Length: 256
Image 1 (cartoon, rainbow, N blue to C red):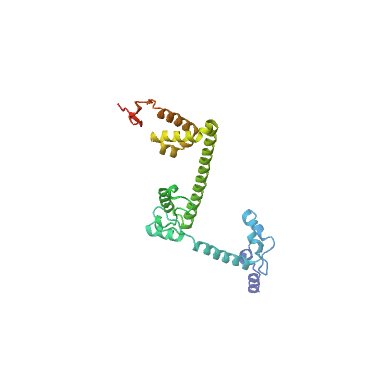
Image 2: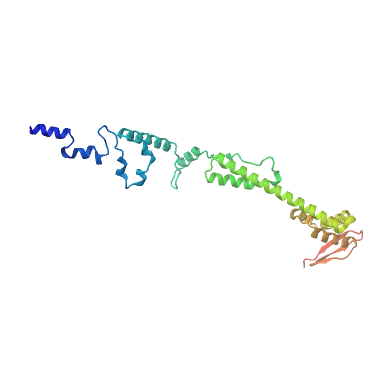
């Protein structure tokens, strides 16, 4: 009888705390499903207690299935990940990283250059060379680097167009101002002014700096041109001009 009683106790899960081991905290029902309040076991862990991931977990099989599927997803994500080389990385590691990221082997392999809508004399070839080196140093993928350089060219083009518009407005404003002051003599006075600063060797400088479109500079050049044509002796710092026998105006500079 004693043996029968012991066997019944084991079968009922009452021996040695078997009930506590097989059914912790009473969260598993007799059919293997979880009790409705099984998540109360994790009441102290708000993240687990309120997780939507566990809403569809009704029994132990569901829990194991979700765990296995989660591990598969994690494996798929890590399989395609590229490790960024550290300071102690070998040349092979760096090369493998660049290949995986689409970084060209050499800076000159980036397909960047002057767009057709930017004039050759307005394009900075040296800047392009620096960009290539920076892109390669930063391990930028080919497509990313080429897109960045394209955006830079767009900004440069917009900047040049804005400058050209400003220059054109300056020319128009200067012409309007001088026509108002000089009236019918405007065309002749402009010729006199341009001849004057050309004789002084300022023609290129006037063009580069934009002085040639400044009414103040043009009026000063016109006054100088009149004095030159009249043969007036003009002195500056250590120099002046003289009129030769054939009527040509020359400028002498004393550097002593």
